[in-house]
Length: 243
Ligand code: SAH
Image 1 (cartoon, protein in one colour):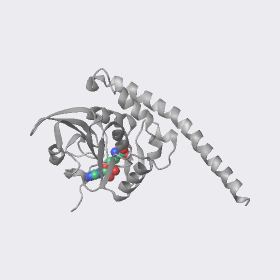
Image 2: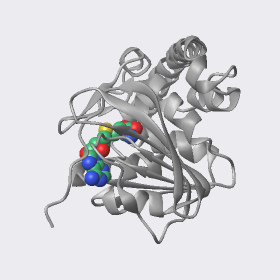
Image 3: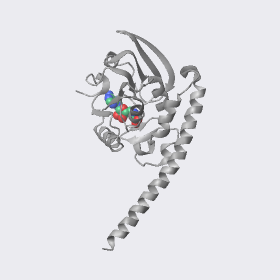
Image 4: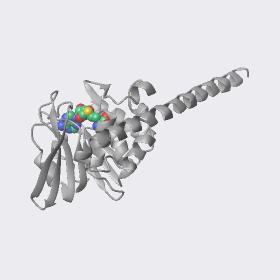
């Protein structure tokens, strides 16, 4: 009978610690958003006067990045740097997540494909802006963990699939936007095929573990695209399945 009050007390302490940590996270997340805003202003050449839109910044301010990284530490999660998520992979730098989201021009009625789920963070950002997000991850353990995180946080409009994203996900498309978060030397034709006219693909093009060109491909008519290089970035390699 004495166990119960102790348990309630312990649960209270845990809840208090979680709330205190969340309050600290709010401040650190707000600082992260200001850093992104400042970077975006200096990139006005590629993004236009507006930089990263208030809508994208708002979503970056609402999404709890610390819940997508292994240690769940705010000071690590909200620094503007990539963070290791295990198995040699990283969650991208917040500014790059914001930049890619901005370039994808996601709207509330959009269906979006992401290739390279990783932690699920970029998918969560896209899911707050789009109607539906389909995301593909090639490493089973990461696909499983990301799917669980997204499910636990009630991102009900995200589907995670295990596989090689080179071939896209035709049953989920066609897509208004495709965001690829791993680097490859060429644009995968199936991803362009699965884009709607007016849709755009945002992807780092170049060798893995080196510098790549963040590239935006816009489908302007069936079989017709325009391509522009936007910024130099550094992503992990896009790997291909053996089968
Ligand atoms: N968007 C992620 C960051 C991903 S890092 C996030 O927000 O956390 C790049 C991811 O792409 C890695 O998890 C890697 O395993 C995955 N990847 C690499 N090649 C792939 C492929 N062919 N298909 C699907 N995922 C791939």
